[in-house]
Amino acid sequence: MKKPNFKLHKQNDAQEKPPKNPLTAAQRTDFLRSMCFLGPSLLGVIVFFVVPFIVVIYYAFVTGGSNSTFAGLDNFKALLGNGAFRLAAGNTLKFSAAAVPLAVILPIVLALMLEARIPLKSQFRTFFLSPIMVPVASVVLIWQVLFNYNGTFNAFLANFGVDKIDWLKSDFSLMVVTILYLWKNLGYNMILFMSGLANIPRELLEVADVEGASPVYSFFAIKMRYLSPTILFVAILSMINSFKVFREVYLLTGSYPVDALYMLQHFMNNMFSGMDYQKLSAAAIVIALFMILLIAVLFKVEDLFGKDVEG
Image (tube, rainbow, N blue to C red; front, side, top):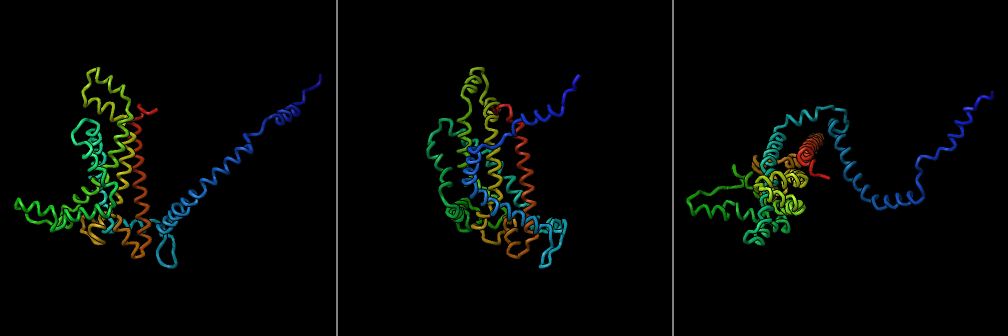
């Protein structure tokens, strides 16, 4: 009996197998066309974001001077032991902890008010949307007129026998900047929440109303759950903007504000002016890691809270 030639069968099977998903000429053409459109943006991201961040990482782990050597974590230890950095980080965190929750909660309240039938709705909307169209310098000028030592607010308080307060150099300075930050950002956040409320299925709200659910229950059980992606986006956006409040502080108080308004950007600008790139780079990495961790926590919370309404 003749033995079967298994080797020949294996060769035939190998020859019969089709090639693994080769790109057709049309697909290659589409890929090249896509890269032609994406190429400039991709090149810009690499040149202006990726490469500088790699340079920052390099400076954070080397010593200063012409003969740079590997420093390990010494630059980070020096940064955390720096009193100016601790002051700036504490002020920035304190400001963000107060301003970001308000920048999320107040726009929700405003969006709900505009969704209801209230008098002077157009004027109310205009008041909060106007800062979006006005340049930051103009908004800061308004605040200087209001909270200057001889400004409008002190003139108003003088009618009640209250002594003048130099608001931007007092213990109330952080509160003044917080109010400015909120007025500058509430309008945009309010628009986002109004859009989120408009996308909630009306059928669910009608069913809840028919079943006798209270407005408070409908808000937390339905509206808040459908608004969770918007809340996440607004929280991240507000947090990023709170770290950039240096612009307003600088225009209000100049390069050397009171200790209560000394922010992280002040510290980083001073390190740049003093050419202390090691501390500057270490601070940039610490801030980036903190932001990544905080955003990851926010994404996890949103996923747990609103996963059952996504789809």
